[in-house]
Image (tube, rainbow, N blue to C red; front, side, top):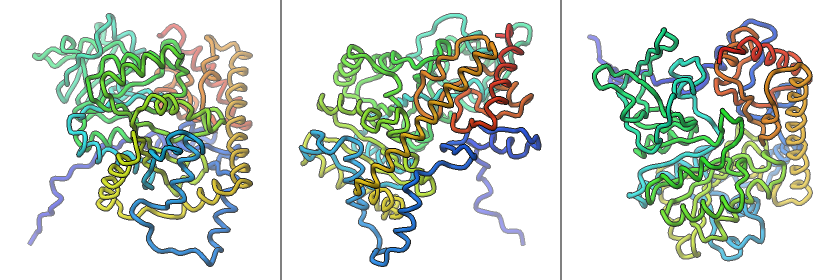
Length: 488
């Protein structure tokens, strides 16, 4: 007798990422190159690991005094203390006043999982989450649109008033230039969709798209908030028209956002806000009582200066803001297989801090109970030893200098090739992952004709470029730009 499975009605989930890597692996071309690895690479194409980490791994493995008992619910205290001093500085006022604390979390998204759970319970009126980061979503790319998106946007549309389109979204331009279908809901202006034909006549001419009702956020932690029932709206600092980070995006979103919402902000240091912009931003955030949740996953990898990369936090500390931080330390130490971090809490005083931490520890018992120790032990051993910490800082600085050098070489080679356009934006951006500033046709040319794999938004990992492939990559970019010239 056939038994019906209890899983019969469970569909195969939409694959969120990995299709580009899968296609790359299936490509038999000997010259194929993958420029979208998440982690920093060495010149030999291996994941970068700080030189001090292997030493600590060996030392920990050979230490007979270690106790392998479960950690407390809040994790390793020495790790949390060391990480907070790294984030804020040993003598920062929040540490001196004892109003900052943290909970040892699991993986890169653990802090967001824990923080979102807390906010869902204790900020019930804050059900809208705005995610603002340097990552540019590929909403149009997922629809299969091959033109420059600006061609579809003939007139400005206020981006604050959006509604959810129906599950299937189709559009056909005159002459059949563009035709696509979208298998998930998309935010469009009310005037853009025809309820009779379900056709799309235009999308908002804004480089930031709001994601709701089943759309997949660009940032992984957007999924965390979305799965918990929050309305997620996502914006990017990157202006693909001007080829630069636009600080006004953050100011505009803050101005339009409703009272009491949640802002999740990543890579804010890339925007280089002026003093006037900081003042405007602070005023908007305070007047609307917007709760801030910062993503700190690349401290030291942006400029090579640990303090400079998180210096913006002092603006919020000095203005009396309460906020959360997701502090992930895996990338800066090169221990990707030991995903480890902290949910950082900044409160107005110690009494409030202890109340929040107690509720967070209660939630961790349902999420993971006890965090893992190995990654935390490695990081703590390095941060608590001045000599090892200095060696780690130097290795991190060397990595960032190499990234800067690669970007300079790419820009110079494109200049010598006579590639049309300005390529200053390559060196203007900080960090390992930056935009090439290519359009969708140029990216498709590189993938299909040159076997160079990169995301459709052209945000690549520059550490994937080395002395062995830089000439081929820059020559291919030059070809892609020339071959698509006039098709914009």
